[in-house]
Amino acid sequence: MIGKGIGAFVGDKLAKQTSAVGGASGAALGVIATTVLRRMSLPAMVALGVGGYVAKKVLDKKQDDEAVSAPPKTSTAPHRGKAKAA
Image 1 (tube, rainbow, N blue to C red):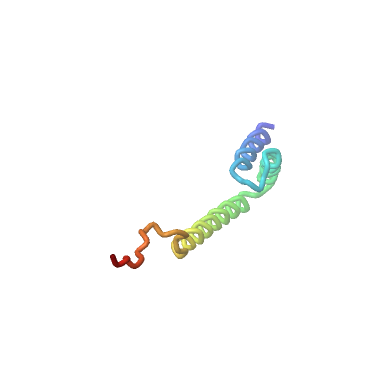
Image 2: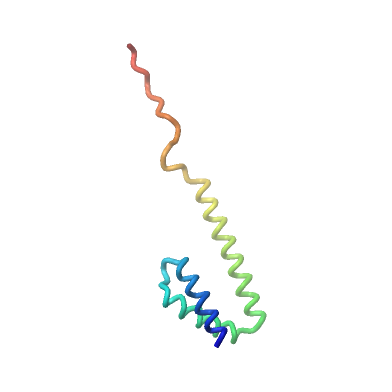
């Protein structure tokens, strides 16, 4: 019972950070996640954790590469047009 409460709390906090999942949906996912984790074997839990870690690192690197390769949307340098002759 305590595990389901903790799972609901964590799911609710996760839902607040994720725009695709609502508050009640996040709490329900937290309860489901604790039930699934309780039934998983230790090697499966370790594999799931390592897979999530690797996926996050790959996505972070991809976002960093896109940010570096994309040119800025606006220039902060002053416009250097031709000077008018007086």
